[in-house]
Amino acid sequence: MTKFIKSKKTTIIILATNEEQSLKKTVSIIYKNNKKDIEKFIIITPNFVSKGCLLTIKRLKKTYKKKLIHIYQPKKFPGYGGASIYGISLVKSKYLILCDADGETDPKEVKNLIKMMGVSNNLIVSCSRWLSGNWIDQYAFVDYFLNWFFQKLTSLLYLTKLTDFTVGYRIYPTKLMKKIKFKYFNQSFSLESILIPIKKRVKIIEIPYNFKKRTEGVSKNNFFNKLKYLKTLIECRFRITY
Image (tube, rainbow, N blue to C red; front, top):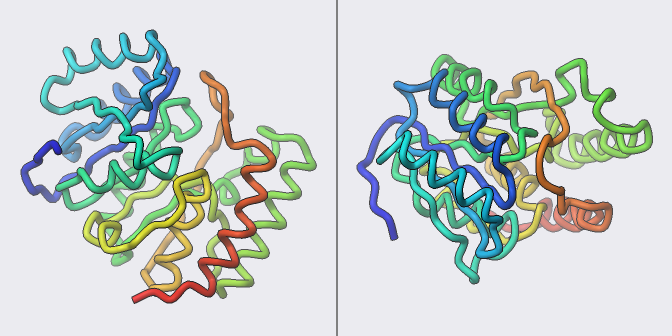
């Protein structure tokens, strides 16, 4: 396992599979806007990562040197959630942010996440598509309505005023995340990683997030995967946490 020096800075965990230009753009924008606040970039890929993505990572390593490392996802941590959980285990900085390499997690928002974490007394700052004005432009009306319904259902079930539980684009205290025993190795991790902190009564605020559909790669978060969110929603509600 890679060792890091403890720091109050932020580690950016980026999950990549077949992205090239959007991956390069993600790293460059985050570093340019947050140079003093970034401890590490950790890029995690599965073994079936594309050659083009690997070539991009190789070039990024030459540019950012010790600031950026590439790690293959272990088999015992499969899926989107597995890669995220494994990435969290590697972090030694005070804060961490989970990003995708496909452009959906706009790298410009990292600056706002770090800023709000610094000026508030909250432990988690989360991006919300529902606080922005472009959400309906990115998806068809049916998808928009189903997402709206799910968010409202979740807020009622968990007695919270938060508006977006599935986007997964947040800044977390590393210490908090390492204490949670996450169960979901699939896309449901994005939901679990906010529901459990809510149950623990962690202070959370949201910032507007101008979500845009991915520019590269193919999403594996299909309709059947999204149905699993309902199971996660109920299981987390009644999970015993300490």
